Image (cartoon, rainbow, N blue to C red):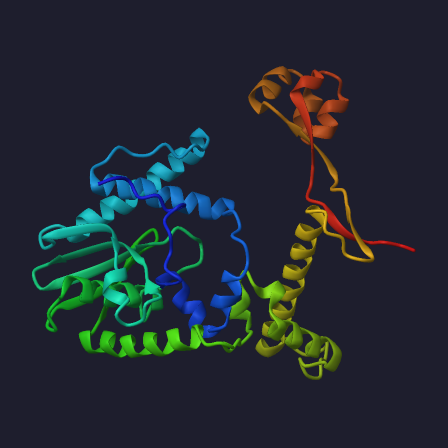
Length: 345
């Protein structure tokens, strides 16, 4: 068994990780898939590394070299080991089989050919099945009625041909283990929900329902005509209602403002990407980012600053450079991200 590669593993078109957003906005799936893939951000890369490290530990394979600096590699190692320790303690004494990275496609494709996904870990034994999911983000996630875990559990039930009297538990590890039992009958109802959802997702003209929750992480929001229409209506028709600055802000007003902001920021980021590729936008250009001075080797800089009180009081790289006690080689110049700028006629 080789260490799974999360980066290159092909995801099902309607994988378990997409279900929650698809329930909020069925049309988001096709919209996102019409766009080119984007590189993972730092948080996603860190989460991937933790998953791969944990998978290796659970599978008894050598831990992969993540390729981060020493501090981040320790963070990855510590997080993976904490998760594995929790899993081993939780499965001790009852689990007969522990299956990390269990691909449940074969259990789901008979519901709809585009359904699939890979559970982080499934453990079975003693009339019990637990489906585990490792979460590395800061936003707390509950296993209760969790669409992703319910999809994986249903796939595992069908794949492993589990009996109707089996006890099924959904578990999320996010610094601590959180559990929720789900009934076999409830997963059968979930099967009907998934079948209906898949039909909506792959309709010729799928429904798009913009909302602050649905659009928050959607890659397609800059290109969504429904979201653009909602944002434009809000801007031109005061759709937030009568706003009184002397009154407390309402939930509706804040949700609406969040939705419009998300659309505006997505359009601006898409515009920057287009301009950076050399594709012009009439009336707009990119303004070069602000120059920033950075210290290359902080340890060497601190050693050289010994005995110079000004260096300890004044901590910005620009001020340290002006002191004249450090060589030019200790500093580097970088630029912040470029910003959009209106072209003046």
